[in-house]
Structures are given as C-alpha cells and as structure tokens.
Image (cartoon, rainbow, N blue to C red; front, side):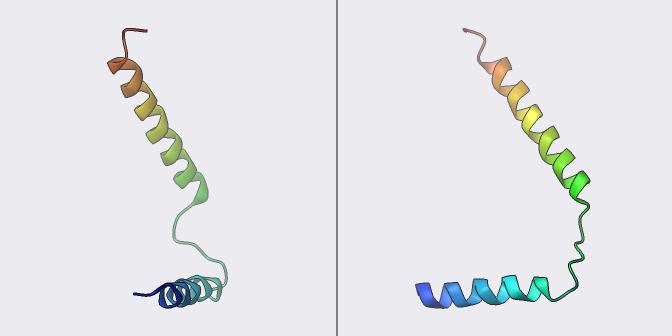
Length: 53
C-alpha cells in the first residue's frame, strides 16, 4: 500500500462512521472507566516489581 492509498482508505473509514447519526456502540463512561481501571492495574503491577525505590 502506498501513502495516498492509505490516506484515502482512512478518509473513507472516518467519513463512513460520521454518517450513521453519531451513535456509537460503546458507552463512553464504560470505556473511560475500563481504561482507568486498566491503567491503575498497570500502575499497581509496576510498583510491585519496583520495590528497590
């Protein structure tokens, strides 16, 4: 794939999502809460393995 083909494909993909009336399949609060939970879990794991500080 060349760069112009990639840009064209991504442009078509982005424009097709905007034509559906703005309805999304995922609840933004659930998505944000899941991301926060995942980051807190990664922070906890990192602090468990870094006991020398």
